[in-house]
Amino acid sequence: ITFEIVMEAVVSTQSTGIQTNLRMSVSDVCRGKGNGLFRIASTSGLSPIIRLDRYQKALAEYHRALDAATDNVQRCSAHKNIFVSNHYIAKIQLERNEIDLCFHFFKECLDHGESAISLSVPRIMTQEWVDNIVARVETVLSEVLETISKMDYDRRTRILFRMSGIPKNPEHKMRLLKQLILDYFHHSVSALSNGDFKTCLAAISDLFTPLTTLEDLAKYSTLCPDDELLSFLAEMNEDTFKTRCIAESMQIRRVGDDLFESTIHDFEDLDMEAVWQCIDLFKESILLTRENDIEQEAISLSRMGKVYHDVLKQRNKAKALFMEVVHLGTTLQPRNLSQEEWYRYATTVLAEYQLKEQRKEEQEWNVTRQVYLDKMKDKLNVLQEKSSSTSAQDFMVWLYKTHPPQHVKRFDVNLKDVKSATADQCKKLLAKAIVFYHPDKVDAKVFSMEYKVFCEEITKCLTSKYECFK
Image (tube, helix red, strand yellow):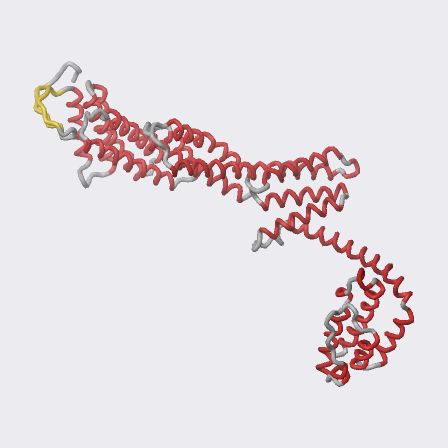
């Protein structure tokens, strides 16, 4: 058949809904041959290999028809036939697990399906014909996404990236780009949760191109972008920014950790410039995670506190940093952080600081207290003598009469009840007396430090009596 040969025929073009008398062109003849082969391939009971062979032969005829087409009606019809044939071939290749070949035909399918739709715009074909192609293109797109979803990440994103460049229809292109963006983002988040910041940053870098392309489509498309797409773009930009900040923070902290370990390895010849560089790195890491990830911020604070504690010996600065670590840790409850190295280190060092401060305060208090003990020596001797020589009931009666608790506003103890108290009653009365005289209840600024020290000694005597009832 050459382009000059034509045949007289009455052609009923069911695909266009128009019936006319015209000269059968080379394109029509090729399409006719392709239709015959297509019907044979669609016969039930044929093996996949035979069906594939017939569809491919039909596809070759449809391509000849497209090459020979002289008007848009013929081109539309040829594109439609190529589109449908590629769809059937793609599904057979999918059944045979020939994934690469499958997506080659899916790509051809989408390309020719959209071409058929675009050429039919000026009312060349009936609306029913156009709607049928549009619906089938949507079906193909859904099959592509469903097939891709079952693949591993690398293969899925590689195919999606190639497929996203095919559709001319903005809506189809946006749909593929959204899926590609989500795959990249979810992979980055998954990698970050496993501490793999390198993979996370690589995925975010890959995400940038399709995200920018989708933003341009939404911005310059003749279609008005819907609220859902605009919301998706806004959320994705925000979430991607946060994820990248966290990953970069982890990367910078790793650099700081490595530098710190190499610096303190040679402690005798300590490089102080490197130490301060470590602090700068940890500060940068903290700034990147602040308000983005509480745990990562706390880890970087703990690392910086370690430098101040281990190397610079600046206890106050280290304590402030470790206290902030513990504070951030409480906001992560009910999660148990006791197994996390960075949290254990911070709490252990804080406990050491608190113990040292407590011992220092006790030493200072003992020095102060001894001055008043020496001053009250005679009064304390009487107190000790009464405590050791009288019963608990008599001691309390003597105490309330001789040294009533001046600082207690409501002192409602009946001395007769105290005198005649049973063992169980006496135990309760002793507990009440201990509360009355406890030095923590005494304001030294109001009642003097001497009175506070004396109440402390009284409490010791009452406690000693109370322990006899246990």
